[in-house]
Image (cartoon, rainbow, N blue to C red; front, side, top):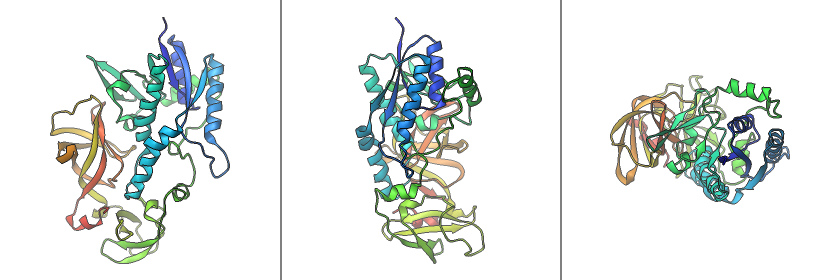
Amino acid sequence: MKKKVILGMSGGVDSSVSAVLLKEAGYDLIGLFMKNWDEKDENGVCTSAEDAEDAKRVAAELGFPCYTINFEKEYWERVFSYFLSEYKKGRTPNPDVMCNQEIKFNAFLDYALKLDADFIAMGHYAQVENRNGEFVLLRGKDQSKDQSYFLSRITQKALSKTLFPIGHLEKKRVREIAEEYKLYTAKKKDSTGICFIGERDFDEFLDKYLLSEEGDIIDVDGGRIGRHSGLIHYTLGQRKGIGIGGVGTGEPWFVVGKSLKNNQLFVAQGENHPALFSISLQGEDPVWISGKAPELPMKCTAKFRYRQADIPVTVSEIEDGALNIRFDQPVKAVTPGQAAVLYDGEVCLGSSIIRSAEPLNKVYSQINID
């Protein structure tokens, strides 16, 4: 009998070409479009409805069924509530990482298994390899599109049942395949917005769900130099949109800390100001893809944001199962709430959520989020 695969279809070119490759490989294919969010953007457009239609159109072109599954309740409870609670704490969460952990490779997987699927498939740029019964997550071949960072908190259960059909391809080749098959999505541009928010005014979106209060902007020497529009609108390392140009040396200003207690935003001037740099971080809630923690301390590499180059680090365990990740060299703009993703060469080992960072210069300890 043919193996049954349920493909998560987004209405984009990557999941469309994944469908092509799965059909070519002879799988019994079913498409599922996940409806995680029900809201129109500021132009009155519900992009999820358009994406669902695109997914179904591609499925019809290729000759397999595609249905819509509603995970709005699960998304709200497991991802969006977390997202809001992190912003309330002054942190900057990564909802795409949490969506993969809680929805695509959890709720979606469980639903697919109830339909007697042998595998689920996703259009991510990543690869899975079975190494003597252990399933390892590898970076995608296209390093500029590699999405292992966002998959760093999924489990052995999920990996053992997951196919990434385009993980071995370059994006250019994916587009070419879409053109060869004359797919409706062949020229559709890639989505660049946050998974549920899309491409919209982010500050305006946050203000719909969280109260924001204006407060003082303080430089690292203690001087009051302006007013902020609400701490939820700023993230560590941010340069644009602070609104204090023309002050001081003329160099750009960067966000380097927040005081929730005093509703103050701390800034420093110059892209190489020492207040921007950290020498280590504490990471909470670690997830190891192998299902078990490696022997610690260990040397490996890490990313603290998606587009960052790998950084050599030493990882050790501290109280409460949290991790201390010490950098070989100081790192700029390490942001609480983001994922610290660990690698051994091409293998993604797992990740933890950044709780706090140790400043390069102890004099700046007072600007940590409190």
